[in-house]
Amino acid sequence: MNDTNYDEALVPDVELPPLLRLADGSPVADADTWREQRRPQLLALFAQQVYGQTPVQNLPLHLETLEETALPGGALRRQLRLLIDGAHSVHLLLWIPRQRPAPLFLGLNFNGNHTTHPDPGILAPSGDRAARGSSAGRWPVEDILARGYGLATLCCDDLYPDRVDGRADSVQRLFEAPGDEGGAWGAVATWAWGLSRALDALLQTGDCGPVALIGHSRLGKTALWAAARDERFALVVSNNSGCAGAALSRRRFGETLAAINTRFPHWFCRNFRAWNEREDELPLDQHMLLALAAPRPLYVASASEDLWADPRGEFLATLAASPVWQLLGHEGLPVREQPAPDTAVAGRVGYHLRRGGHDITVWDWERYLDFADAQLR
Image 1 (tube, rainbow, N blue to C red):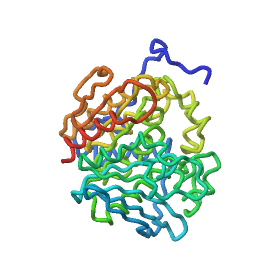
Image 2 (cartoon, rainbow, N blue to C red; image 1 turned 45 degrees about the vertical axis):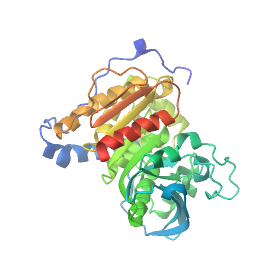
Image 3 (cartoon, rainbow, N blue to C red; image 1 turned 90 degrees about the horizontal axis):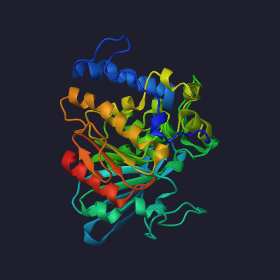
Protein backbone atom coordinates (compact mmCIF):
# COMPACT_ATOMS: atom_id res chain seq x y z
CA MET A 1 0.00 0.00 0.00
CA ASN A 2 1.39 3.44 -0.90
CA ASP A 3 0.41 4.97 2.45
CA THR A 4 2.04 2.26 4.57
CA ASN A 5 3.67 3.72 7.67
CA TYR A 6 7.11 2.45 8.69
CA ASP A 7 7.99 5.48 10.84
CA GLU A 8 7.64 4.93 14.58
CA ALA A 9 7.29 8.69 15.05
CA LEU A 10 4.03 8.59 13.07
CA VAL A 11 2.42 5.87 15.16
CA PRO A 12 -0.61 7.37 16.94
CA ASP A 13 -1.04 7.33 20.68
CA VAL A 14 -2.55 3.95 21.43
CA GLU A 15 -5.09 3.29 24.15
CA LEU A 16 -5.83 -0.41 24.25
CA PRO A 17 -9.26 -1.76 25.18
CA PRO A 18 -9.02 -3.11 28.74
CA LEU A 19 -8.11 -6.75 28.92
CA LEU A 20 -9.08 -7.35 32.53
CA ARG A 21 -12.50 -5.71 32.57
CA LEU A 22 -15.79 -7.37 31.78
CA ALA A 23 -18.11 -6.01 29.12
CA ASP A 24 -20.04 -4.13 31.84
CA GLY A 25 -16.83 -2.44 33.04
CA SER A 26 -16.37 -4.41 36.25
CA PRO A 27 -12.82 -5.62 36.98
CA VAL A 28 -11.52 -9.13 36.46
CA ALA A 29 -9.75 -9.64 39.76
CA ASP A 30 -9.47 -13.42 40.06
CA ALA A 31 -8.86 -16.54 37.98
CA ASP A 32 -12.48 -17.75 38.15
CA THR A 33 -13.80 -14.49 36.68
CA TRP A 34 -11.28 -14.72 33.86
CA ARG A 35 -12.10 -18.34 33.03
CA GLU A 36 -15.86 -18.21 33.46
CA GLN A 37 -16.68 -14.73 32.17
CA ARG A 38 -13.95 -12.67 30.52
CA ARG A 39 -12.36 -15.41 28.43
CA PRO A 40 -15.71 -16.48 26.90
CA GLN A 41 -16.53 -12.81 26.18
CA LEU A 42 -13.27 -12.30 24.28
CA LEU A 43 -13.58 -15.58 22.40
CA ALA A 44 -17.05 -14.56 21.22
CA LEU A 45 -15.85 -11.08 20.20
CA PHE A 46 -13.05 -12.45 18.02
CA ALA A 47 -15.42 -14.92 16.42
CA GLN A 48 -18.03 -12.23 15.71
CA GLN A 49 -15.71 -9.48 14.52
CA VAL A 50 -12.51 -11.03 13.14
CA TYR A 51 -12.25 -14.74 12.31
CA GLY A 52 -15.90 -15.74 12.00
CA GLN A 53 -18.08 -18.28 13.76
CA THR A 54 -16.85 -21.87 13.46
CA PRO A 55 -19.79 -24.27 13.10
CA VAL A 56 -20.42 -26.62 15.99
CA GLN A 57 -21.60 -29.29 13.54
CA ASN A 58 -19.60 -32.49 14.09
CA LEU A 59 -18.40 -34.32 11.00
CA PRO A 60 -17.18 -37.93 11.17
CA LEU A 61 -13.41 -38.32 10.91
CA HIS A 62 -11.85 -41.52 9.54
CA LEU A 63 -8.12 -42.04 9.94
CA GLU A 64 -6.07 -44.17 7.56
CA THR A 65 -2.33 -44.88 7.65
CA LEU A 66 -0.99 -44.58 4.11
CA GLU A 67 2.67 -45.27 4.84
CA GLU A 68 5.04 -45.86 7.73
CA THR A 69 8.81 -46.05 7.46
CA ALA A 70 11.41 -46.80 10.14
CA LEU A 71 14.24 -44.27 10.01
CA PRO A 72 17.86 -44.55 11.19
CA GLY A 73 18.11 -44.18 14.95
CA GLY A 74 14.67 -45.58 15.65
CA ALA A 75 12.55 -42.65 14.48
CA LEU A 76 9.44 -43.11 12.34
CA ARG A 77 7.93 -41.29 9.40
CA ARG A 78 4.21 -41.83 9.13
CA GLN A 79 1.74 -40.47 6.58
CA LEU A 80 -1.94 -40.37 7.44
CA ARG A 81 -5.09 -39.62 5.52
CA LEU A 82 -7.89 -37.86 7.34
CA LEU A 83 -11.19 -38.47 5.58
CA ILE A 84 -13.75 -35.93 6.77
CA ASP A 85 -17.41 -36.85 6.41
CA GLY A 86 -16.43 -39.42 3.80
CA ALA A 87 -15.91 -36.65 1.26
CA HIS A 88 -12.85 -34.48 2.00
CA SER A 89 -9.27 -35.74 2.33
CA VAL A 90 -6.44 -34.12 4.28
CA HIS A 91 -2.93 -35.58 4.39
CA LEU A 92 -0.91 -35.44 7.61
CA LEU A 93 2.85 -36.01 7.64
CA LEU A 94 4.19 -37.16 11.00
CA TRP A 95 7.75 -37.61 12.24
CA ILE A 96 8.13 -39.41 15.58
CA PRO A 97 11.39 -39.71 17.56
CA ARG A 98 12.74 -42.96 18.99
CA GLN A 99 11.46 -42.30 22.50
CA ARG A 100 7.66 -42.53 22.43
CA PRO A 101 5.22 -41.12 23.35
CA ALA A 102 6.90 -37.80 22.63
CA PRO A 103 5.90 -34.14 22.80
CA LEU A 104 5.18 -32.91 19.31
CA PHE A 105 4.98 -29.70 17.29
CA LEU A 106 2.05 -29.39 14.88
CA GLY A 107 1.94 -26.76 12.15
CA LEU A 108 0.41 -26.02 8.79
CA ASN A 109 2.59 -25.66 5.70
CA PHE A 110 1.92 -23.52 2.64
CA ASN A 111 2.65 -25.65 -0.42
CA GLY A 112 2.33 -29.34 0.40
CA ASN A 113 3.89 -31.85 2.77
CA HIS A 114 6.48 -32.86 0.15
CA THR A 115 7.94 -29.32 0.24
CA THR A 116 8.90 -29.61 3.93
CA HIS A 117 11.63 -32.21 3.41
CA PRO A 118 13.51 -33.63 0.38
CA ASP A 119 12.69 -37.25 1.30
CA PRO A 120 11.35 -38.84 -1.93
CA GLY A 121 9.03 -41.07 0.10
CA ILE A 122 6.81 -38.15 1.12
CA LEU A 123 3.60 -38.24 -0.87
CA ALA A 124 2.89 -35.29 -3.15
CA PRO A 125 -0.40 -34.23 -4.74
CA SER A 126 -0.69 -35.27 -8.37
CA GLY A 127 0.26 -32.46 -10.72
CA ASP A 128 1.66 -30.31 -7.92
CA ARG A 129 4.23 -27.83 -9.16
CA ALA A 130 5.91 -26.96 -5.84
CA ALA A 131 9.41 -28.42 -5.67
CA ARG A 132 10.12 -31.25 -3.28
CA GLY A 133 12.01 -29.94 -0.24
CA SER A 134 11.62 -26.31 -1.33
CA SER A 135 10.56 -25.24 2.18
CA ALA A 136 12.83 -27.61 4.09
CA GLY A 137 14.72 -24.71 5.67
CA ARG A 138 11.59 -23.91 7.68
CA TRP A 139 11.22 -27.49 8.93
CA PRO A 140 14.50 -28.75 10.47
CA VAL A 141 13.16 -32.26 10.95
CA GLU A 142 16.39 -33.93 12.00
CA ASP A 143 17.15 -31.25 14.61
CA ILE A 144 13.64 -31.52 16.06
CA LEU A 145 13.84 -35.31 16.27
CA ALA A 146 17.30 -35.13 17.85
CA ARG A 147 15.86 -32.96 20.62
CA GLY A 148 13.26 -35.64 21.37
CA TYR A 149 10.26 -33.95 19.75
CA GLY A 150 7.94 -35.13 17.03
CA LEU A 151 6.70 -33.00 14.17
CA ALA A 152 3.42 -33.11 12.28
CA THR A 153 2.39 -30.96 9.34
CA LEU A 154 -0.44 -30.64 6.84
CA CYS A 155 -1.02 -28.23 3.98
CA CYS A 156 -3.43 -25.35 4.58
CA ASP A 157 -4.74 -25.69 1.02
CA ASP A 158 -6.02 -29.18 1.87
CA LEU A 159 -8.53 -27.43 4.14
CA TYR A 160 -9.21 -24.16 2.31
CA PRO A 161 -7.29 -23.22 -0.86
CA ASP A 162 -5.67 -19.85 -0.18
CA ARG A 163 -7.46 -17.81 -2.80
CA VAL A 164 -10.48 -15.54 -2.87
CA ASP A 165 -12.65 -18.17 -4.56
CA GLY A 166 -11.32 -21.06 -2.47
CA ARG A 167 -14.46 -21.72 -0.44
CA ALA A 168 -16.08 -23.95 -3.08
CA ASP A 169 -13.12 -26.35 -2.91
CA SER A 170 -12.71 -26.15 0.86
CA VAL A 171 -13.97 -28.31 3.70
CA GLN A 172 -16.57 -25.60 4.34
CA ARG A 173 -18.70 -27.09 1.58
CA LEU A 174 -19.54 -29.99 3.93
CA PHE A 175 -21.18 -27.69 6.47
CA GLU A 176 -24.64 -26.21 6.56
CA ALA A 177 -24.88 -22.68 5.17
CA PRO A 178 -24.21 -20.09 7.88
CA GLY A 179 -27.19 -18.13 9.14
CA ASP A 180 -25.13 -14.97 9.54
CA GLU A 181 -23.11 -14.23 6.41
CA GLY A 182 -21.32 -11.30 8.04
CA GLY A 183 -20.01 -13.50 10.81
CA ALA A 184 -19.37 -16.62 8.70
CA TRP A 185 -15.96 -18.21 9.15
CA GLY A 186 -13.15 -17.41 6.76
CA ALA A 187 -10.04 -19.29 5.70
CA VAL A 188 -8.09 -18.65 8.93
CA ALA A 189 -10.88 -20.12 11.05
CA THR A 190 -11.17 -23.07 8.66
CA TRP A 191 -7.44 -23.74 8.90
CA ALA A 192 -7.72 -23.50 12.68
CA TRP A 193 -10.59 -26.01 12.65
CA GLY A 194 -8.36 -28.32 10.64
CA LEU A 195 -5.58 -28.10 13.22
CA SER A 196 -8.02 -29.36 15.83
CA ARG A 197 -8.97 -32.26 13.56
CA ALA A 198 -5.27 -33.03 13.10
CA LEU A 199 -4.97 -33.07 16.89
CA ASP A 200 -7.88 -35.54 17.03
CA ALA A 201 -5.95 -37.77 14.65
CA LEU A 202 -2.66 -37.47 16.54
CA LEU A 203 -4.31 -38.40 19.81
CA GLN A 204 -5.60 -41.57 18.17
CA THR A 205 -2.08 -42.73 17.27
CA GLY A 206 -0.93 -43.16 20.88
CA ASP A 207 2.60 -41.98 20.02
CA CYS A 208 2.15 -38.34 21.00
CA GLY A 209 2.60 -36.54 24.28
CA PRO A 210 1.70 -32.87 24.66
CA VAL A 211 1.05 -31.16 21.31
CA ALA A 212 2.42 -27.66 20.70
CA LEU A 213 1.09 -25.48 17.88
CA ILE A 214 3.40 -23.49 15.65
CA GLY A 215 2.63 -21.16 12.76
CA HIS A 216 4.44 -18.66 10.56
CA SER A 217 2.89 -15.56 8.97
CA ARG A 218 -0.81 -16.12 8.13
CA LEU A 219 -0.44 -19.57 9.61
CA GLY A 220 0.81 -17.92 12.81
CA LYS A 221 -2.49 -16.06 12.95
CA THR A 222 -4.14 -19.43 12.48
CA ALA A 223 -2.16 -21.08 15.28
CA LEU A 224 -3.15 -18.33 17.71
CA TRP A 225 -6.85 -18.64 16.85
CA ALA A 226 -6.72 -22.45 16.98
CA ALA A 227 -5.09 -22.35 20.43
CA ALA A 228 -7.68 -19.83 21.62
CA ARG A 229 -10.53 -22.11 20.57
CA ASP A 230 -9.01 -25.47 21.53
CA GLU A 231 -7.42 -25.65 24.96
CA ARG A 232 -6.09 -29.15 24.34
CA PHE A 233 -3.05 -27.58 22.64
CA ALA A 234 -0.35 -27.48 25.29
CA LEU A 235 1.76 -24.58 23.94
CA VAL A 236 1.53 -22.11 21.05
CA VAL A 237 4.20 -20.36 18.97
CA SER A 238 3.48 -17.36 16.75
CA ASN A 239 6.26 -16.63 14.26
CA ASN A 240 6.00 -13.27 12.43
CA SER A 241 2.19 -13.40 12.49
CA GLY A 242 1.71 -9.63 12.18
CA CYS A 243 -1.64 -7.97 11.48
CA ALA A 244 -4.63 -9.90 12.90
CA GLY A 245 -2.06 -12.16 14.52
CA ALA A 246 0.22 -10.93 17.30
CA ALA A 247 0.59 -7.25 16.25
CA LEU A 248 -1.53 -4.46 17.70
CA SER A 249 -3.96 -3.15 15.08
CA ARG A 250 -4.26 0.29 16.63
CA ARG A 251 -0.64 1.13 15.84
CA ARG A 252 -1.36 1.22 12.08
CA PHE A 253 2.29 0.31 11.44
CA GLY A 254 3.08 -1.85 8.43
CA GLU A 255 0.08 -3.90 7.36
CA THR A 256 -3.24 -2.37 8.44
CA LEU A 257 -6.75 -3.76 8.64
CA ALA A 258 -7.66 -2.03 5.37
CA ALA A 259 -4.62 -3.54 3.65
CA ILE A 260 -5.17 -7.09 4.86
CA ASN A 261 -8.92 -7.07 4.23
CA THR A 262 -8.39 -5.68 0.72
CA ARG A 263 -5.68 -8.13 -0.30
CA PHE A 264 -7.02 -11.20 1.51
CA PRO A 265 -10.77 -10.78 1.99
CA HIS A 266 -11.25 -14.55 2.30
CA TRP A 267 -9.11 -14.88 5.44
CA PHE A 268 -11.57 -13.32 7.87
CA CYS A 269 -15.30 -12.80 8.30
CA ARG A 270 -17.02 -9.97 6.45
CA ASN A 271 -17.70 -8.12 9.71
CA PHE A 272 -13.97 -7.48 10.04
CA ARG A 273 -14.01 -5.21 6.99
CA ALA A 274 -16.26 -2.75 8.83
CA TRP A 275 -13.27 -1.81 11.01
CA ASN A 276 -11.02 -0.75 8.10
CA GLU A 277 -9.49 2.61 9.08
CA ARG A 278 -11.54 2.47 12.31
CA GLU A 279 -9.08 0.55 14.45
CA ASP A 280 -9.64 2.72 17.53
CA GLU A 281 -13.33 1.83 17.53
CA LEU A 282 -12.73 -1.91 17.36
CA PRO A 283 -13.79 -3.39 20.73
CA LEU A 284 -10.70 -5.60 20.84
CA ASP A 285 -7.04 -5.73 19.88
CA GLN A 286 -4.57 -8.53 19.42
CA HIS A 287 -3.19 -8.57 22.98
CA MET A 288 -6.58 -10.05 23.84
CA LEU A 289 -6.07 -12.88 21.34
CA LEU A 290 -2.66 -13.67 22.85
CA ALA A 291 -4.20 -13.71 26.33
CA LEU A 292 -6.62 -16.44 25.26
CA ALA A 293 -3.66 -18.85 25.30
CA ALA A 294 -3.25 -18.41 29.07
CA PRO A 295 -2.33 -20.17 31.28
CA ARG A 296 -0.62 -22.32 28.65
CA PRO A 297 2.87 -21.31 27.46
CA LEU A 298 2.97 -18.74 24.65
CA TYR A 299 5.96 -17.71 22.53
CA VAL A 300 5.83 -14.75 20.11
CA ALA A 301 8.67 -14.09 17.68
CA SER A 302 9.38 -11.12 15.42
CA ALA A 303 12.05 -10.31 12.83
CA SER A 304 13.93 -7.02 12.73
CA GLU A 305 13.47 -6.42 8.98
CA ASP A 306 9.89 -7.66 8.85
CA LEU A 307 8.35 -4.20 9.25
CA TRP A 308 5.17 -5.21 7.42
CA ALA A 309 4.40 -7.45 10.43
CA ASP A 310 5.22 -4.66 12.94
CA PRO A 311 7.74 -6.33 15.26
CA ARG A 312 7.35 -3.65 17.92
CA GLY A 313 3.58 -4.06 17.81
CA GLU A 314 4.02 -7.80 18.32
CA PHE A 315 6.19 -7.20 21.38
CA LEU A 316 3.81 -4.63 22.86
CA ALA A 317 0.85 -6.97 22.39
CA THR A 318 2.76 -9.74 24.16
CA LEU A 319 3.61 -7.40 27.01
CA ALA A 320 0.00 -6.20 27.27
CA ALA A 321 -1.28 -9.79 27.39
CA SER A 322 1.12 -10.83 30.13
CA PRO A 323 -1.02 -9.73 33.15
CA VAL A 324 -3.43 -12.61 32.47
CA TRP A 325 -0.68 -15.17 33.14
CA GLN A 326 0.15 -13.29 36.34
CA LEU A 327 -3.52 -13.33 37.35
CA LEU A 328 -3.51 -17.10 36.83
CA GLY A 329 -0.43 -17.59 38.99
CA HIS A 330 2.35 -17.73 36.41
CA GLU A 331 5.26 -15.53 35.41
CA GLY A 332 4.36 -13.67 32.24
CA LEU A 333 6.85 -11.91 30.00
CA PRO A 334 9.89 -11.20 32.24
CA VAL A 335 10.86 -7.86 30.62
CA ARG A 336 9.19 -4.49 30.05
CA GLU A 337 11.36 -3.32 27.13
CA GLN A 338 11.74 -5.01 23.76
CA PRO A 339 14.93 -7.11 23.91
CA ALA A 340 17.88 -6.57 21.60
CA PRO A 341 17.89 -8.58 18.36
CA ASP A 342 18.80 -12.26 18.70
CA THR A 343 18.03 -12.27 22.42
CA ALA A 344 15.33 -14.59 23.75
CA VAL A 345 13.43 -13.82 26.96
CA ALA A 346 10.92 -16.12 28.57
CA GLY A 347 8.80 -16.76 31.60
CA ARG A 348 5.59 -18.64 30.91
CA VAL A 349 5.44 -16.14 28.01
CA GLY A 350 8.43 -15.90 25.67
CA TYR A 351 9.57 -13.45 23.00
CA HIS A 352 12.46 -12.77 20.67
CA LEU A 353 13.35 -10.39 17.87
CA ARG A 354 15.50 -12.22 15.33
CA ARG A 355 17.74 -10.33 12.93
CA GLY A 356 16.55 -10.67 9.36
CA GLY A 357 13.34 -10.83 7.40
CA HIS A 358 9.99 -12.58 7.20
CA ASP A 359 10.85 -16.24 7.68
CA ILE A 360 11.11 -19.05 10.21
CA THR A 361 14.68 -20.23 10.62
CA VAL A 362 16.68 -22.91 12.43
CA TRP A 363 17.66 -20.24 14.98
CA ASP A 364 13.97 -19.60 15.66
CA TRP A 365 13.32 -23.31 16.07
CA GLU A 366 16.18 -23.66 18.54
CA ARG A 367 14.52 -21.03 20.74
CA TYR A 368 11.14 -22.77 20.49
CA LEU A 369 12.66 -26.12 21.43
CA ASP A 370 14.43 -24.52 24.41
CA PHE A 371 11.11 -22.99 25.47
CA ALA A 372 9.31 -26.31 25.10
CA ASP A 373 12.04 -28.01 27.15
CA ALA A 374 11.37 -25.56 29.98
CA GLN A 375 7.58 -25.63 29.74
CA LEU A 376 6.56 -29.14 28.65
CA ARG A 377 9.19 -31.50 30.05
